[in-house]
Length: 325
Image 1: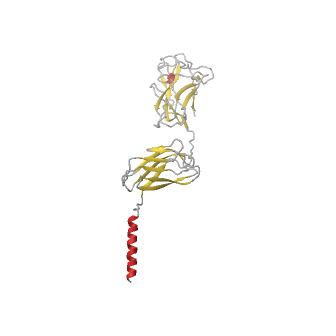
Image 2: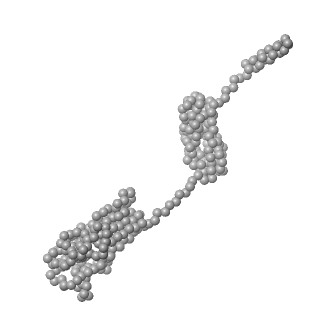
């Protein structure tokens, strides 16, 4: 019994001496909240990395972030600290504080050429950690859409947005006064619009509106006509033959999107009366960009002299719109 006790005592003393002689072992703690926000994860693409982690232990040593060897760090790579392109490591000096997040940005890293998960290692001296990132065959989806060409054009009598017969008239002309057409065909001595044009398009180059036609011609086939205002005139003189139109924009583009524009009335027809020659086409309005729902009022004026032959007179004016897509 005494021998057994002596053996146990000897073993205990030997074990205690061994523990005294062995160096103390310290295990590194893991970092927390470790992530890598990459700009691209497709194979062989160049990506930037924003690496974030929170250390567990305060340590005054360097932070070393090591990229998997499959990443291409040989050219163009740089970071917030010192980047070793050969080793694929980013070293940040200054130490870390427990619980205080660390963020490091690395740019210009080439992704591996084959798909699969890769590991980025973190070492702070006291702590270690790993971040696994995916490398995939493709990280993008192409999204397509189509926008059709749009165009709206309306020619109508009246100025209320509706048309009944697309006709206007002066009534009976009198050499003693200037008359203006109305959409009821009776005419008036008060200047005012009796028809309108409405135009809109998404054409990047805008549109133009043309007019063709001739002056008022006798309907009896005699060949008599009323002189057209082939020279722009603000107000025709009383007692002289005249027929012409003027144009004014009454509603600009209702689209406020940048890039839309307003139409410009041709100078010959703006605040003065004019008529295209029977063999010509005149541009009434020009717009150099897309526009929506622009409205232009048209005034018609007529005069006769005391020698103008009696009879019924008429003409047809044709308005066309051309978009520049």
